[in-house]
Figure 1 (spheres, rainbow, N blue to C red):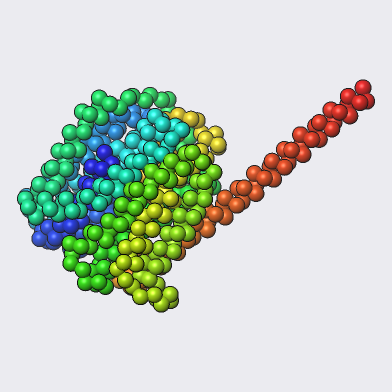
Figure 2 (figure 1 turned 135 degrees about the vertical axis):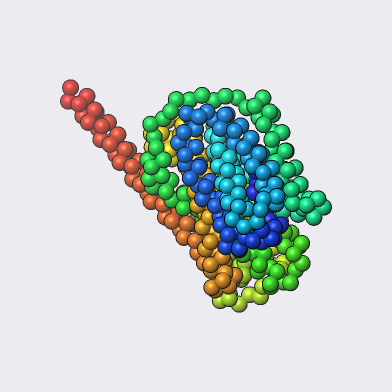
Length: 416
């Protein structure tokens, strides 16, 4: 499902903008068609996370995959729609439906996996990110090849049919998980200080990816005069390094939970350094070279996996520590929150990136984006230091209290 959904998401890039322009859609409208996906997913994830237990995890997952396959096919038929407002309205309608279906599928899948593998959450999610990364890598070249060979409709119809073929397989394989609705709410979860800071980290990583989506190809074409077909290969280093490193960080996060906080903080710092060197920022006086750019993207993919994979189990453990019940209702809340916060970054990253790229150029825009990662790393590091200090003081206080009780008991025994 991750592979198919990510391919469905990324397949639009190589050829949809050109087709939309033929249908009298402006660049601003095309950007809004792309951007409405993240906004819709944000809202839908919160709703599905809240009501997953009422709807049923398996039903939500199957329904999400089924609708996603159907609307992917419908997107391939949009070239038959009359140009102008009707085409634009249908694009928004299909894109919104796709975002809702993906939010349902991804929220349910996170919850099902966390329920099925409670002791290996990070490992399983890290393994899934392999297929998310592959979907982002394979979508543009496969979509571009099918478009050039067979026309606009074929890429979407082929991918939609593949997604639909998974529905009976999912219905046969996945078990049913029943649970009673919990009393906890999103508001109670997100107002936990640790969860608030972790959501800022999720926003940061997602926004960094979104920033590259809308600016990196323009920079590479302008700076290095590469043919358009080679631009996708530049993104390959980022996607593959992220896909390969994610399972490793997931495994380490599950085997050694104490490493999670170091992964999150260090990953943010490395990401910040990468964005300073992407241009590179002019104050460093380093000449921009293609090999350096690709190397930095590879390191950025690793640092992104290091940062994002531990956040889900960290939020989950924080919820349990603060009285949330261990069941499907809590898993649904955490899954919905994770998906929603990722969508916030996916929406803000391209908007901020596009604005800064126009105003100050790619080099300084990337540096500003790096400051976002640096800020989230410093905030997370400061929080962990305060948390460690508070726990140390509490431990000392408990130890002193126990010693005082023992002394009092000894005194009573001696006097008696």
